Length: 125
Image (cartoon, rainbow, N blue to C red; front, side, top):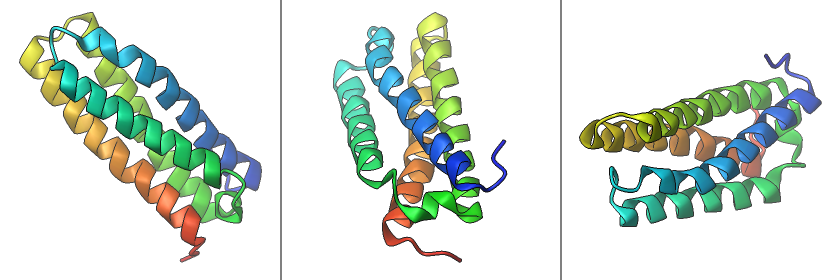
């Protein structure tokens, strides 16, 4: 768990980015359960988020306690997405797999996108 130090906030964000990059490659495993067009949309969204992370990873906000807290929340959503994708690939029925991954993707994009936006603005509450 993050203790609010700069290295940990950055590390949490980098771990999120690495996991997302891996998930982007794994998403096609949902073929047959999720429409290929939807998979491509999710892959593009993940690519954009990872690209944004690459541009902001050295920003000071990630080194603050608030940055670490937000990065931890984003990482939790990334792990939830990872779990949803893995469950979908491993055996959830098609409708449930699509719904589960879609909800997890939405939650992850909201939190991870919020981390990126907050870091860009470097607003400290």
